Amino acid sequence: MPPRDALTRQVERFLDHLTVERGLSPHTVVAYRRDLGRYAAFLRARGVTDVRKVDERLVTGYVAAVSASTYGDGRAYRATSIVRALSSVRAFHRFLLREGQVARDPTAAVVRPKLPRSLPKPLSVDDVVRLLAQPDRSAAGLRDRAVLETLYGAGLRVSELVGVDVDDVDLEEGSVRVLGKGGKERDVPLGRYARDAITSYLTRVRPGLARPRSRSALFLNRRNGGRLTRQGVTGILQQHAAAAGIAKKVSPHTLRHSFATHLLEGGADVRVVQELLGHASVATTQVYTLVTKEHLREVYLTSFPRARRPQAAKR
Image (cartoon, rainbow, N blue to C red; front, top):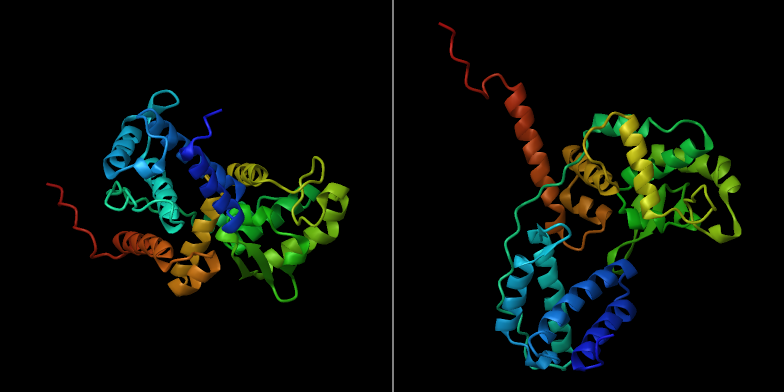
């Protein structure tokens, strides 16, 4: 174990703040712990055991060290990983500044590496229709259909989906209450297909899966009746995507991307989509408007007769 020096205590105080005061998920706190563990090791290797002695030069050196390092079989860290590492360090220093434990923030002037723009890759409407048609009428199929219809029909994060309890679903009103990032609750509408799929699952399948350990969880696994996990949802999705002949890589977040893109292509206002997705900022949602613009351009170029140069006449 590392020594209980000032740096260790400062990191632990910040992680406690994330867990207790901000209520972040265990998965998120683990990611912060990993990032700050690497940062603390970097500082200790340079003889620094108290954040009050950190300056801008050290933070810049850390970002450079992460950029130059590799992992696994020698692969370089992606720009997103470097930005996340700096973001964790910046949040740590800002917290200590607010707490009055340091006099200044050494990350304030450190320039964040520029990220290449990465647009979401949604499925087409036809692909989604084929995917959702795959589950059969067996008990497993009815459960899988309810999972996929809810995931796509409400645009949920997979962590939100597996956290839904039976009482969170209002089938009469057609809505589901989910716990999003930062512990924020929101109510999301459920369309007819999702409502019908959940109704069939609740009446015909869940009673046979339920065990004492099931408690109030909506979606259960078939092994021991426990709450379905994120990995379980991913496996269900990939199984039916393969059966539907969808060649591209599909994850639960792909369906969330598809939900947002299809709404905007159908004429939904970006701020409505923001609320449905549970985004804190509309800027996060606006990336989907770029996808729809690309889609419009693609349709224009392939469909409008005067959008392309005519081919040279054969001689």
